[in-house]
Length: 509
Image 1 (tube, rainbow, N blue to C red):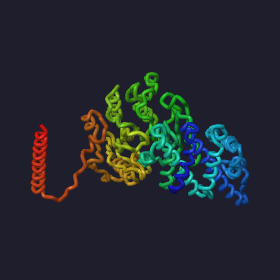
Image 2 (image 1 turned 120 degrees about the vertical axis):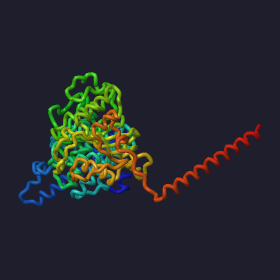
Image 3 (image 1 turned 30 degrees about the vertical axis):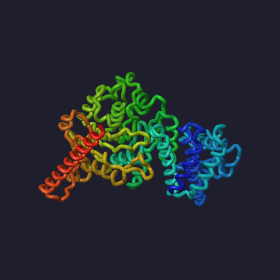
Image 4 (image 1 turned 90 degrees about the horizontal axis):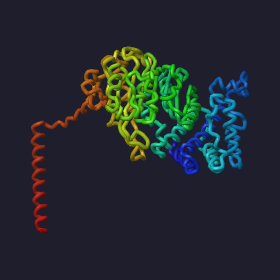
């Protein structure tokens, strides 16, 4: 996607600012983008069926068999584009959304019907339709559908950036998602996100599968979300990617009302809200999920970790993004819970992340990699070694670079993501017996006994040590003499300046 298209898209959506709540104007633009997508997919499949003498291009089941949404005549993009200047175009778009939901059960109640509202200008709706018609020229190829997905991601990411913390609450930066997906490698099985936001972990998992010649049908996704608008965005996002799963919504949230109490998952990826204090902790004090101890009422961090570990299958693995405080806090029994998790083999690895990765907040974050059974198993077809009694620590704080054009936002490069994930895979024994080695300043494998000596604080910097200092080739004796000479020179200059200052102050008396 070119920078010109990016600028045009954001400028068009930016026109909606002040006309409605920020949480809605993303929904408006992305809803139209979805209509553009499903129409393109439908028309491409229709042309294919029309060329097949044995197929019926007017049979909705022909489309459903290929995971393509059936689009009624009045809901098709060409019809809306032809009527974009109509006084009732907003009402026509709302009706198009209803028609698509009516004939596609998986989209029921997911699409926005806000275009006919008096406060949404007809010019904005018409302008967005014109923009998506002229600047997103599609021919139904896989490349075109990927472009739609990238435009969608751009909208979510750009609005998260511009809205600050509010927008970023449900958006996990792509480089963090990529690190976890590359570490966990969710190629087959059940994938769960208990606070799924707009579905970023699922989308990145789908990309990972395709990149490794796998089939997206080999995974089943489960998610839960408490924000109603974000929940709908997730459903649209997954639908555009042709990812179908069980995404649940309830206003009470996952910790209070677990949508999948009896389910267990091979992979769990999550970015729960950090340090939430009002999570109904008092009400849930006797919950069976608290295997490692009852989480404090005033902070939900360890409730999330316990909930996630509880839902892992026998050989399941999880990656969780949390605030750095979770690695060292001793308040309200958190240190005891952390100790129990380590001693019971729940913690596989810890990764300290660089600052400035998140939109709108400078809170430093870390990754918790949890495992249900560290004794054996397989990952992506590769055997794992017995890792009981050990935890891998990775200090990635020095990684990352500013995003081009930004003074505040950082991202991890592909090579950096590869190094973090590759270190984890090597440590687990996937790449051979001698593939892993501690790297001072970056990674270290620590025993439970060593962790105990640090009072079960899991900050990677305590274990990886300082990085090696690059040798400059200068002989030690010569270097020592030179540095001592420089130091004496600095002392002499300091005394000279001190005498000069005293002399000038004396002249003023």
